[in-house]
Image 1: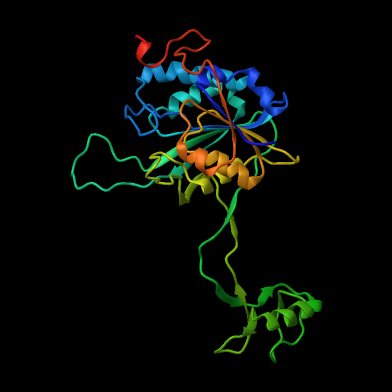
Image 2 (image 1 turned 120 degrees about the vertical axis):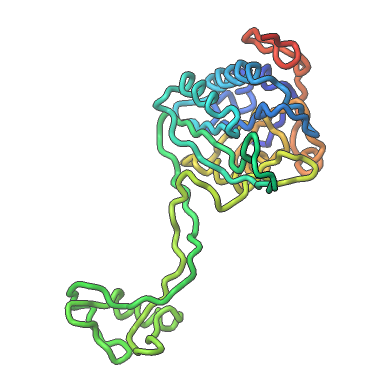
Length: 317
């Protein structure tokens, strides 16, 4: 299915009617990267809601999300520490506490300061709350960064079929070689099995292996640092987050109600996932970079949601 972008206000557009863009089926992945309630005005959007406004507004967004997912859908909520604790309370209430799987910490670029005392420490991480009612998550693995090294080819235990002669040596008493004789000869040709330069005894090359990434993702920066879009996320990070979903079917459907710079769209194209994105202001860079259908919603300029709260400047507390 061709990617679709809807130009409109997510608090209005995000409802069951949007399923018509996914063949009237629930979405498999919902990636939520909303405004963080920072109080700043960015080049492509104003993040100017008060904390109370933001909480009412975002709780309504989560309620709408519940109407467009199935039991095994993956929900990713990407925030910083300003509102993430409130978002978790709302998500636990709406999706169920048992649906919460993990909090993933993402690394941000940290600006240095020479001040000896500050009101708040510089934020150096983002947070992703992961929800899934049923089913498993893919275990994300990466290559560890250790350097290759040579290790003794002997292993403890008696195994008579692995006690052949190699480089003029046999295993020490009570030991055996790690691999079969056929594999050992092949490994010598590949240069990963050799006699130790000093002792002459067999040793093999240990290469970097894979390790589970867990919930602390510090190997990559979560932001793309685009001049044209200040809060653009890293495509590599978004691809990794989407890959938590165990795709056991041909087409995985993703919806991003806060399209922003289009990073999720780019990640979905690379992964072969179908995509629906929503944003009130479609960045020009998206129109230039992607051949995508853009639908303009006639109600996108309304400033209220269907759950009865006026947002942004019209709200009073």
